[in-house]
Length: 361
Ligand SMILES: Cc1cc2nc3c(=O)[nH]c(=O)nc-3n(C[C@H](O)[C@H](O)[C@H](O)COP(=O)(O)OP(=O)(O)OC[C@H]3O[C@@H](n4cnc5c(N)ncnc54)[C@H](O)[C@@H]3O)c2cc1C
Ligand SMILES: NC(=O)c1ccc[n+]([C@@H]2O[C@H](COP(=O)([O-])OP(=O)(O)OC[C@H]3O[C@@H](n4cnc5c(N)ncnc54)[C@H](OP(=O)(O)O)[C@@H]3O)[C@@H](O)[C@H]2O)c1
Image (cartoon, rainbow, N blue to C red; front, side, top):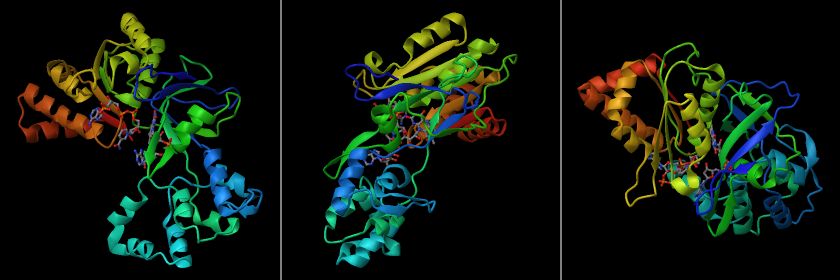
């Protein structure tokens, strides 16, 4: 494990190298790794204390397997979000008219606002008069789910290894410090010798052209969106791919958040990367994002598109992907001399011919 963000960064993003050993797992660039994480033992211990339990009580998990309360809360149950079943059970056991109101069908938005940033422990703390036995509580919790991480290595370049690029999720809400389950498990609680329960999730549409093809590739990957493109560039090097490759990367600060900088310089030198364009959002007064850098390079992007380039976008779905999409439309309209409708049709044609591929989350 290596921390990619350097001193002065506002983030904690890490590079992980996982040994596949004799698992028989195999993957292609563009695939992701599905990881089954564990909850934070400190949070679990606090919950057990609030329940007045020891942790050794026998319960049945969602798969109907008998286990201890401690193990169920650590490995099997979602404890960092609140299921409606739990809220309903609390409302049934205590005078909690505010909860009953929140669960009225027409109050979905208020319920979502209430749940945002709250964990199961908040309910136990807020309603101390409500008592659950371990066997009553566990069925009120959802089953812990896998998290997906884009693989940031090529198996051909890194035999028997899977690399990941993971931003650690931590935040404060409702007066408590919160930790994203999987990202903090990987960053803070995983012992180097531990086996990680995982499987490969094929990234069906996210594939490089065959190395002998001349097809150029344009890769847009701000933040952890860079991950699959590190895999792509490694793969291009080992397969001596013929087409051109252009990477757009963005993060907050050049000095602290330029992930894999030396690797990109080496890739530019050996031709596995043709062009690198960066956008560091907080190094100047005005925000500067990948889509701004793309617009500055509009003529080049248009020329590559007209040469048949495939555009790949990876990273934040909530804002970045939509903004990059808008920028792509604008570039095509301005450089191609097209109306907004014609540009939209051009983008739609790219999508239909699988030349516009997105892996956003
Ligand atoms: C196809 C795919 C590929 C991905 N690849 C990568 C990758 O390469 N690298 C990477 O880092 N991630 C990647 N992700 C995201 C990753 O799967 C996880 O969602 C991410 O690591 C967070 O998981 P977690 O378990 O740490 O956090 P969780 O325990 O799931 O917590 C995250 C949740 O916390 C809540 N939250 C977050 N911030 C706040 C806040 N300020 N206030 C209130 N609530 C908040 C939100 O509900 C958020 O959904 C990918 C996702 C997909 C679907
Ligand atoms: N839902 C949300 O509101 C939200 C917010 C942040 C992160 N996330 C999630 O947190 C995880 C980790 O994020 P990450 O570390 O990979 O990086 P990230 O938060 O996506 O940030 C990477 C870079 O993208 C910039 N950025 C912010 N908004 C943008 C936009 N609209 N268009 C283009 N670039 C934009 C950021 O700038 P600035 O930070 O300077 O704005 C930063 O320079 C991801 O899962 C992401 O989806 C979600």
